[in-house]
Length: 71
Image 1 (cartoon, rainbow, N blue to C red):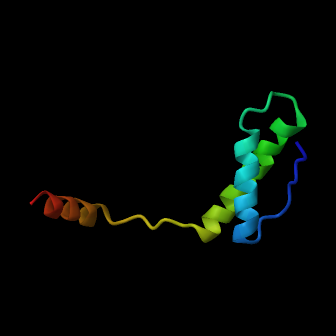
Image 2 (image 1 turned 180 degrees about the vertical axis):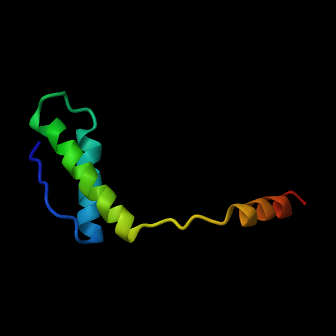
């Protein structure tokens, strides 16, 4: 496989990195492909942290919401 590791600046770059990660998941230890997984994952996580954040809800509000759902 031709490993392309580059900066992830756009959603398209991010999607491409995820596809490469998926293809490399079965890579054997001590290969270029295996070494590339760590770098790709690190870059994808950094992009996710900046562009795909998930706001955590207030625990009390979450409990109230769940109680309301049970009624």
